[in-house]
Image (tube, rainbow, N blue to C red; front, side, top):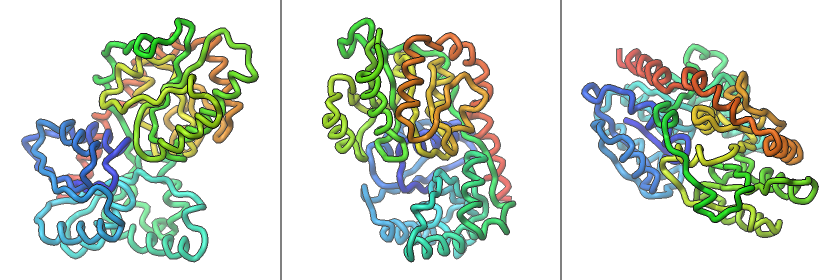
Length: 370
């Protein structure tokens, strides 16, 4: 049983990258998740596996989600529960204990001080400190995310053996051989345009506002030979607020909001650089996809992302620093690093192959079943 509270973005691609590596003759999967458009894409991604789907309403409250999962687990006969994300994990904890069903939680979350402020924050922290040790195995997707978890959830210090670090990986074949999308032609952009890709969800942790500020600085303070354009791919979340901010800055002609695309491989190849101005990540899949595609990456040194970028040709800049991002983009425009990026493709493919993650995760699942 695979439980998802938000079957979108990195969680959706994680499920695809991992479970597509499993032997379809050995497993039956039941996915429980809200009925969202990206969930339907996930089901299509998992074509070929024995998958059934139990739908929930598109945006259930935490209480509604918890109650639904509680009864689904108790009434069903599942050999193992694999929850994804904190809300899904906590919702599965009590019913998994009552039904004596092994429970693996893949934690795609990063904690911060803001989440635990005030009385409500203290109650939340105490609740998590009680609930999370009840999970059989917690899968941390990076060493950074493991340290972050131990820092905020004090009780897990007594259960360190339950936390297993298995770094993310991606489907390398999907990005190693692909045609480039001609984005300049699609958008009728000049030949001297410089295409900056943003492919994160429009949520504050993704730092889109700092990319907008950087573009504003480039046009106001730099002598530009090429014309930089931001191509932002995605929809939903706070996209309306982001569009309003771009308009407020007078940057409408330089920032394009592109439709969501399920297969981003050709899109990546059509970009000059991928900007990742994140404030925190559990373990970024996007930089792996870009590096295997041979596209330069400029990313921050935030938790989770720095671990992926370390030892690669990618440029690493400080968090929340629009000026540093503008400087890095200007350098990339004047001295492109595409040759370096292409030279790193083979090493990136070896390092970020999802088959390694899938194999280790399957070993964990089988150990729980034993």
